[in-house]
Image (cartoon, rainbow, N blue to C red):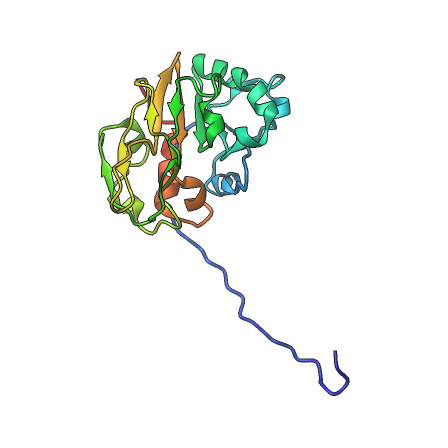
Length: 236
């Protein structure tokens, strides 16, 4: 502050961005959410109308998991929480007994035995699709995850931000079903953006697809895909 300079006030316009998205939710949802790193997905799911319970890794052993229709694990949650790793068998047991689990991307920790029901490997460096406008090929357009409750089309990959997919496995067990293929220009196509497997009586979904960026950015297609992952379809 200087005595010879009067205070100056600078006024800025306030703005609010509202995005309308045609998203159909599976019926009867009751979702548990284990938060990850830099994770802003849960509030958006709640805005979409998903009944959500935040689940701390410490509380997993004493929680009645079977009351949930799906359990979602946030990005890099296993990297951030040894407790989650220690209690992961409770989550896998939930899936074996008919539950649905959606695990957003992790890094090297996802290769550890006991984390995922079937193994994956990551390349060095791990595969990514950093071009948010990279072409997407539907390798299995009949996949239940692309058809119910929302019919996913190329239009759902328009307007994405920052990247398509991150830390995609280079190899994965044959139990996993794939449905999408994508790559950066000049790179080999990678089909591991969504890996889905039947595990026991339930469904396990691993999600390198960067929906954790699309939902907070208000990308309608990202919300429609995420809704499909929560239920309303069956992987066999």
